[in-house]
Image (tube, rainbow, N blue to C red; front, top):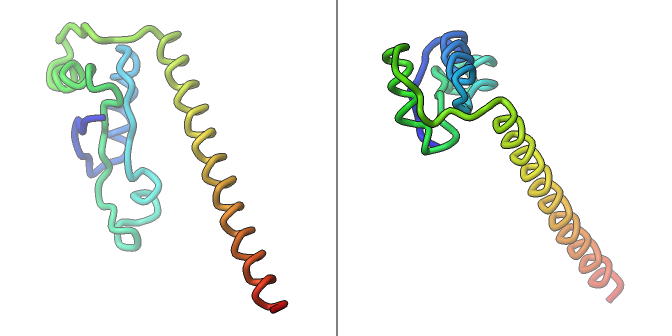
Length: 119
């Protein structure tokens, strides 16, 4: 992932992300929830617009600077949906592994505490 730009206005970042998606470029807006809560509470006074695929970074920057730029790295809607589905599944798998191993560690601590308390 590469940072395309920082925005002080979330709506502007979302608009840029939408325009890029229409051209087949996958993006992510970072600090979206922290920014919405309040910069004074979270410290997030801007959001970042990221090109998810490094190969699309140059096209994304060029297109946002000049809408006449011909995008060569754009994906089809089907390719974008497949990529997003794989990314969601991967995130889900990582989260499940984290929960499983955390549970094992907690269980080990509980069993150790019970064992020590009995002796």
